[in-house]
Image (tube, rainbow, N blue to C red; front, side, top):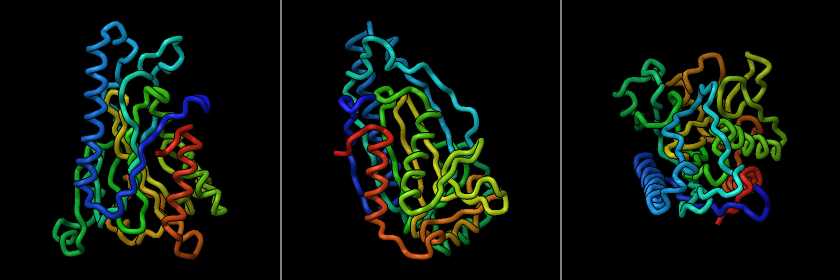
Length: 272
C-alpha cells in the first residue's frame, strides 16, 4: 500500500466502558461491514470471486500456524477496494473482567464465580480466539474493526503488524519488545524462559475478512489479577506492564498517542 492509498480509520477513544457494551458495539460494526459487502456483491455479481471472504477465523494467545490467502490486492483490478466498508479503531479501558476465548479452558480460571463476584470481577466466555485473559483499569485495550481486503488478506500478517505497533511503542520507552515463537502478543526476554514475560496480549475474530477484538497493552495495570488465572493458558511465563518495567506510572494519554502514531505507520493508515 503506497502513501497515496492510505486507508482512513475512524478512531474513537471510548474511555472506561463495560466489556459487554463494547463487545456488542464491535459486533454491530463488524456486521455492518459484512452487510455492506453482501450488498456490494449482489450489486456486482461478476466481482464475487474477487471478494471471497475468509469464512471465520479465530486466533489468539497461543496461535501457531495461521491460514494465509492470496493477497487480493495483486490483481490489476481489485473491486474489494471499492466496497463501501469502513475501518474503525476503538480505544477503551474496562472495569475488572476476565474473558475466555473459544479455545480456552475453564481450568485456567483459578478463582471461583463466588470469589469473582466478591472481588467485583466480571466474566465472559467470548467469540475470539485464544484462552483466558484479564482486562482492567490502567490497561489500554484496542479493537481494530478493519476490512482486511483493503489491506491484505493474510491473518498472520495482520497479527504480526499488530505486534509491530507495540514493539515500536515500547522502543520509544527504551524497552525491547519481542515476539515469542508459536505464540501471539508482545513479550520481553523471550530467550530466557525464567525471565520471559508478556506485556501485550492479542486475540481476534475475523469474518469475511472483517476483524474484531484486538489487543490489551498493560500500561499501569494492577498485575495481581493475573494471579487468579493462567494467562492465555501459558503456565511458564509471567506478565508485566510498562509501569513495572520502567518503575513509574505512565501518562496514559501519552501512551495512546504513541500507539496511534505507530498504528498509522505500520498499517499505512490515517486515523480520522
